[in-house]
Image 1: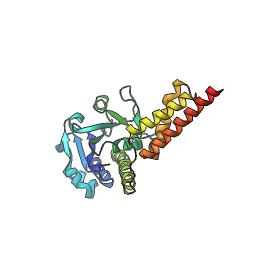
Image 2 (image 1 turned 45 degrees about the vertical axis):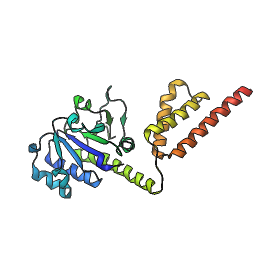
Image 3 (image 1 turned 45 degrees about the horizontal axis):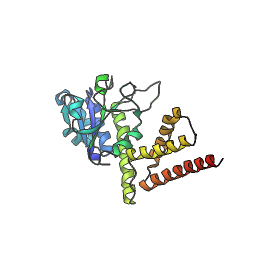
Image 4 (image 1 turned 90 degrees about the vertical axis):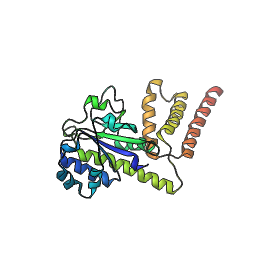
Length: 245
């Protein structure tokens, strides 16, 4: 994962100290590309620097835009953080799931993560400017997260993913992308359906189960192919036994 291709976008932040704390959270996790929907003149420079501490260069290089669309114009994937589900949003990814997806993109393209206003979060029209959603699970009794804490959580998962990839690369090991993993999951569920393991209506749940399990396993290409062969052979043997009966 190329961390320099990860963009953090703050949409209409109000508190200068929060912006400074965001800079520090980003620096903790190797991220340096900050973009803000708003005007630089709206913020108190001194208050930003108090909480940014040694991460002040991130603030100094931050870019300012009039909208999320403008801020993310050069990005391949734009993920809005939200606790609210909506018809247009589809499945909301967990931070670790998003980090996995981002890892398959950032070698060639930029990935943006958008965080909303401290009080209101991202409005519906702002979420419409994103092409996917990410959610951070929290207590129903007190679900609101401080802006910098939310940035820290998402950034940490992205950073952890980059470390995993470096460790794997040092061993000559490259995990398959989510796109490639979809093929393996499709093979598995297709074979299970052939042998009558579940009804057609249950395939979506089964695919989600295998995707969740195998994405955490970070399969190599050879491991993915081996798993496909196992299930293909199991389905073939099952069909042969039914024919013999």
